[in-house]
Structure formats: C-alpha cells, structure tokens
Image 1 (cartoon, rainbow, N blue to C red):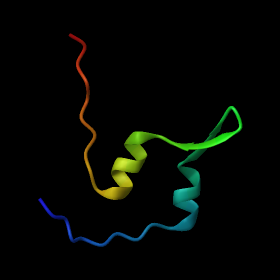
Image 2 (image 1 turned 30 degrees about the horizontal axis):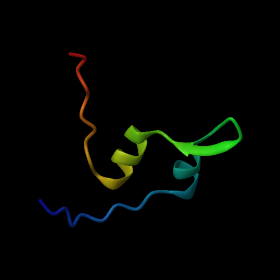
Image 3 (image 1 turned 90 degrees about the vertical axis):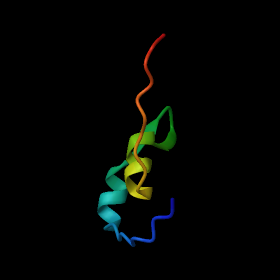
Length: 46
C-alpha cells in the first residue's frame, strides 16, 4: 500500500517530540509512526 499524501510539520512540533533520556535524544515510536503516517500496532501479552 502506497501513501503519497504529503504532510508538513512545523519545526517546533517536531522538536517537541524529541526527548532526552540519559543524555541521548530519542523519539517515541508512536510519535515516529504518526509523523511517517503509519499506525502502531499494540502488542498483546500471551
């Protein structure tokens, strides 16, 4: 499935999604999925 929709995000919005954990800049997987237009699947414990 191809998604050709273009989304432009404000620099401040993207910067607000970057967290510093133990001195390393990281982004949460759900935020990345949102930015790139994917949905995050929830894992169920078995």
